[in-house]
Amino acid sequence: MTDFMILTPEAILTILGMAVVTYGMRLGGLLMADRLPQTGRWAHVLERLPGAVLISVWVPSALSAGAIGMVGAAATLIAMVATRNLFAAMIAGMGLVAFGRYFIGA
Image 1 (cartoon, rainbow, N blue to C red):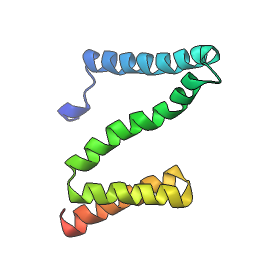
Image 2: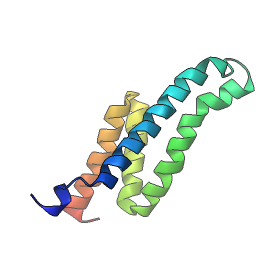
Image 3: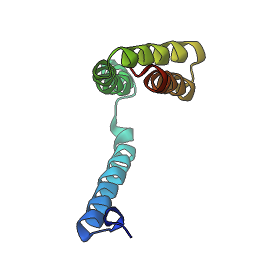
Image 4: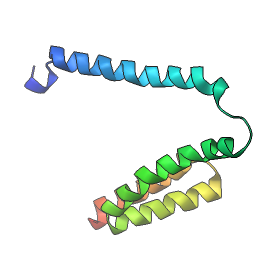
């Protein structure tokens, strides 16, 4: 067995802690869902929030990847508009970036 395959107590506690936090957030969302506004301005803001969070993560990643990252981001956006399928859009963007990095070296 190599060194990287040994599970230390710290690693196990870290994994368990991350699991507790992840499922706690999901449970909290389920428990709080009834208390969120269903109509009005705040409901509109909350509907747009996941997209805003995704963009705030996606754009810096695309910019830091250089030209191929921006081309991949554009391909993702075009595929999403054309197909309305998140999985297809992700495959289009990631596939284009992988192709560019492997064959072009970008």
